[in-house]
Amino acid sequence: MTSGKHEARSAGSADSFSLVDFARQSIAIGESELKKLLRDPTELFSRAVQPILWLVIFGQVFSRVRGIPTGNISYLAFMCPGILAQSVLFSAIFYGIAVIWERDLGIVHKLLVSPAYRGALVFGKAISAGFRGLIQALIIYVIAFLMRIEISLSPHTILGVLLAVMLGSAIFSTFSLIIACIVKTRERFMGIGQVLTMPLFFASNAIYPLELMPKWLLIFARINPLTYLVDILRGLMIQGGHSAYGFMFDVVILGSIYAFLVVIASKLYPTLIQ
Amino acid sequence: MENQSQDNKSSFAEDTAIQTMNLTREFGQQTAVDRININVRQGQIFGLLGPNGAGKSTTIKMLTTLLDPTSGTAIVAGFDIVDEPAQVRRRIGYVPQMLSADGALTGRENLMLSAKLYRMPGSERAARIDEALKFMGLENSAKKLVKTYSGGMIRRLELAQAMLHHPVVLFLDEPTIGLDPVARRIVWDRLLDLRRDYNMTVLITTHDMEEADQLCDELAILHEGRVATIGKPAELKAAIGPTATLDDVFAQCCGVMITEGGNYRDVRQTRSTVSRLG
Ligand SMILES: Nc1ncnc2c1ncn2[C@@H]1O[C@H](COP(=O)(O)OP(=O)(O)O)[C@@H](O)[C@H]1O
Ligand SMILES: [Mg+2]
Image (cartoon, rainbow over all chains, first blue to last red; front, side):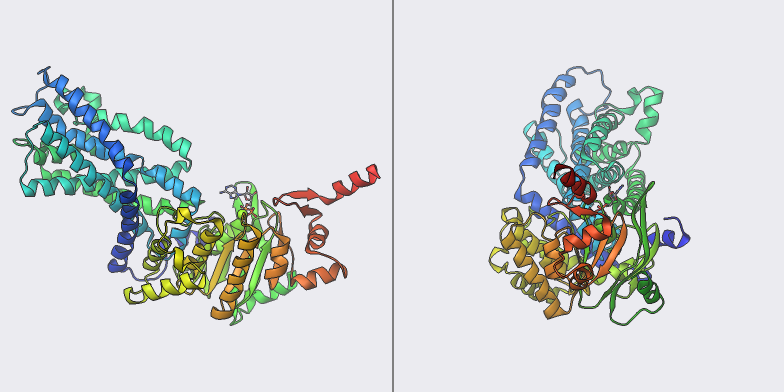
């Protein structure tokens, strides 16, 4: 830590990088996580409760207000992609808890002693968070369908929604992993997790358009990845919906954020056990 | 002992599996591991013996590349842990102090994950996994979820996981802590078999005198981060007296004893209490 030699350590070995190995290792991690998830899906279903409340109660009440400018679409259709983004955020943001749990069990130690790429360990986690996101999407589609919200059912928009949901899940789960590596204990993580989620949700365009926001809030909304995720989903998921920033712009922003987070997380993950 | 390890530093012998050079780790003001010099030959079972807080886990974490040394370094399986951690990782196996197999996966699934992370070719995986399961006597439990395993079975699964890629050196942090005597014996037997069949070098940490005595070819006694003494169990005991036990060795070189749970008991204090009562 003190001498130059010890700092050179993080540069890793002279091994040449193999993308195939990286992909294999990420998939191996993602696959294990998926197996665990499918074995005990209760958590997934309990996560369905919140979006149901938002859409059925909040959504139906607020559709009557008619004070929220949602253009040519109904308020319910407007908020539906926002609620999907919210449930992606909420199910991914507590990912760090599972990681801290794995650290306390020594699972993280074992992963880190293996010659797997540190980045692949982090990316594998994001893949599994992506699966969780997909199941959230499925749940929201079902609710929306039952509530007769004007959902777009064309295959390419659904595919787009699913890809966006996976990217969003990857972003928030990796962000969560970073927080876990910093705080290291469950108690502190829970505190921070609670403090973060609601502000991220409210400082976004999930349930009201940005135009309604005061200036100071707008600044936060503009740097909030959730805003860009909602923007993509709003453009794809509902009939007559459109993206305010354009898909390309959203994808570039979200992609850059994710790349940045992965680099940070790959550096921090090995420090989780120290 | 000090001199011997100093001499070894310059000449890295062919059959050396682990060599530490003034390996040191500080946590803030505290020096958890203080300029340790040990030398483990290929095929040896080497024990790091010491009470809780002696620095055993910290040493193992450095040797397995989990933790950077503050200063000093070590050569493990022919590579420097600071300069070439990735090379070291390919050649070692590790069983952490906690029972760390993933309870929500089956035994086989745990092994499969390891096989993939260690870049084992697809054609070899099944055979290697079967071999490791058989070696550890877990063939019949391979399809069960690990959360249904007993502590001893989990430890054996972890050994299977750690030996899967035939590492040169195996690191085990308190491998039998919390196991009943039967399970403990089985773990010892398997470790001896691993050494016999694969010529694996094994470094274990323990605060259990019996384990150190029965299992280890050579011991380093750690006390407050330093190597208090090094040698074969028989030599260490003989140096003190014909009927001496490892407890006596420990009490002699550290001035304290290790109690059942792995904590210190001050020998002098106990003695003075006894004399006052007597
Ligand atoms: N991550 C850490 N941060 C601060 N102190 C630590 C940390 N890990 C270990 N220590 C301290 O270093 C000393 C040695 O700990 P450890 O290596 O776990 O001992 P052992 O395994 O022999 O019981 C202890 O005093 C412990 O409190
Ligand atoms: Mg320990």
